[in-house]
Length: 244
Image (tube, rainbow, N blue to C red; front, top):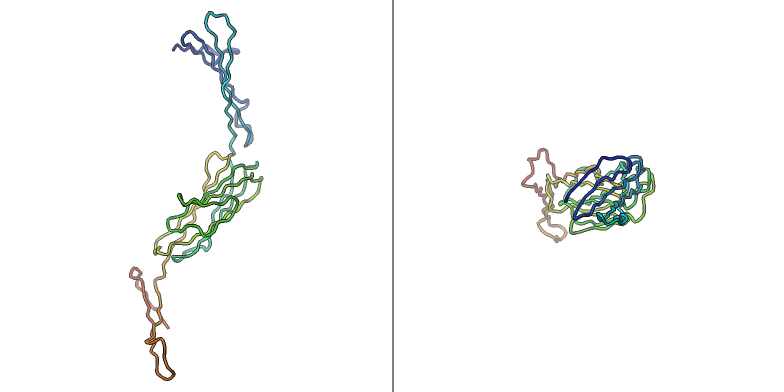
């Protein structure tokens, strides 16, 4: 292949390529003004065009357009804020039910199409007990709660989604449940992440058991009862404990 790039002047082509006696001019057409001045959601279409003529044939150059590629202008701001909250807040015991709420505000200035949200579940959580919000589904293969909105989110509108899941009953003190939500849309340049919520797991260190020397007693005889305090072997020593 021989390649020649003539100086740009007037309507000079961008690129000439010669192969097997055929000269081809390849021209790229770009949207005027570029994407910087276009509002979010503006489609930019690009179509290449080639023209060729067999040397010495005297024929008119044949123009051949390519397929057209369309790109949407992304929004620099989509959901702001995108927040994740959990109830109850603070430390919880094993087996506790945690409810996570995702709140997202469309701050893009245009309706946001094809919005979706995701919340992967921490290994310390069981599968969800409940899901609420538009298009809510749970994917057990990835252990992810997802919400896909079928309609555009209007400008300035807030959407709210929630999922409830129980902490594993075999979780131990020192374990944590860490959750971060994500969001995207057809106008998002990349996925957006929420704040991270961390919930410490604290297993009860002391368990009190009431014991009696018999389950059935006639009136008159004394029935002996006693309290037993059971402390986890991994817990720290306790002081000033009182069992009544």
